Length: 295
Image (cartoon, helix red, strand yellow):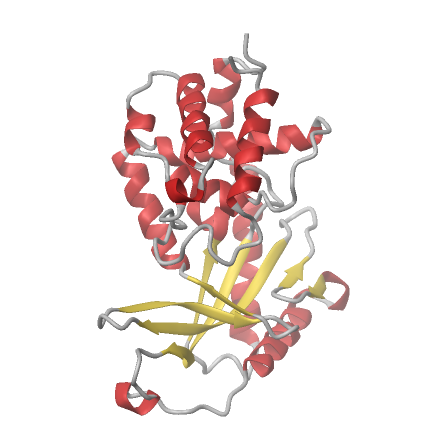
C-alpha cells in the first residue's frame, strides 16, 4: 500500500483556502499602492503583476513563491541579433540605471510598510508577513526584448542582482502556456503540480534530505514536460502521480532524453545554466518514489 491514499492526494490538488487567498491579495494590493504613492515612480510606465506559483495558481503554502514583479517598460534591456545595433531596431541608450530603480522601489516599500517590515535581498525586496498578509518578494525588473537571429521577438523581464548577475524570465509566457496545458488536460496539470509540491513539503517535514536546488519552480516545469496523455489516460491521482514519476525518472537518466526540455515559457532550456542539473532531478524523483512507497 502506498504511503498516501487517493483521498489524501485528492485533497492536495486544491489551491489555498479563501482566507489564505485574502492574505495573498492584501499584500499585492499594498505593493501596488506603494508604487502609486511614490512621486518618482508614479509617472513611470510600470507593470505590476504576480509571477511564480502565486500567479500560476499552483501555490500550496502561504509563504511559497509569492512573487510580485514590478517591471519598468520606459527603459529596456535588449538582446540584439547578430550584426545589428540598437539604433537599427529603434532603441536608444538610456542613462537610467537599474540600481536606481531598485533603490526607489525599496524606498517606496519602506514608506508604505515601515523599515522593520522590508528587507533588501540580492534579487528582490521582501515584505514580511503579518496577520493580514503573507510574505512577498517584490522583484524589480526592466522589460527585456530578445531579438533572435531568425527575426522573432520575445518580451520578458530582466534584472541585475545586487552582486551584478543578470536574470532573465518570461513570466507572462509562462502564465499563458500553463493555462493552455491546464485547459487541454481537464485542469489536471495544475492540480498534479500542487500534489507534487505538497509531497515535497511533506518529505522535508518528515526529515527527508531534499536538495535545496529542487525548487517549486523546477517542479512546475518538470510536470510541464509530462506528455498530456499521462494526465488524461489514468483515472486516479495515484496512477497519474505514479506514471508522472515513472516518466520523469526514465527520461532524466541521460542527457539526450531531456536536453530539449524547456521551462513552462518554452523560451529557456530547463537544464542549461541552472542551479539544478539532470542528475539531481533524477535522484530526487527516485527519492520521491521511494518516500511514497510505490511499487
